[in-house]
Image (cartoon, rainbow, N blue to C red; front, side):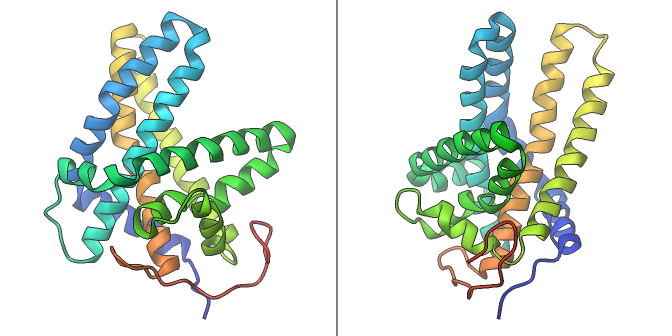
Length: 238
């Protein structure tokens, strides 16, 4: 029987893990985003032409952190709550290359989708939103994680999109409030605000991807149960 995603349940779980695991999530986010956030901001302000380099750095940081969060959620589901940032980093290192490859390919195609008509970009963001958890837990070869993510999302496309949209709006509000509060304090304060925003908000989207993956796949830290085919929807029909 096809698993049905509940938007409210997913969001509640995201924030339950966020607050419960804050002692691990915040240091992990700091390790990943302090250096990369500062470097990206400095590059962009020094030369707007380096914006692409800054975007690549941000992509690498986000991908690495999402993999770490997937490991954390898997540990929480299995009853292990003693993970440290260094343990999570070591756990995701073996699949880092695959994570980056899939992230770059997905980012390029999503960007193309937005350029063409916007809607294709939104659909790709939705159907490929579980690719990172798939890589960390199931470790498929090459770009197979994109197809597996689409398979998991099928039949729940609108619900997955709803989770992504609601959390993105929340993150935007939080980021806007923090940045507005430091707008008149100078460039240094703005840089600090950028880093703080990254640390506070990065776990939210990463947790959402992990929670949705485990809800839809029924996977544990070491195994994955493939769900049956479902009815078609705009985010991935048969």
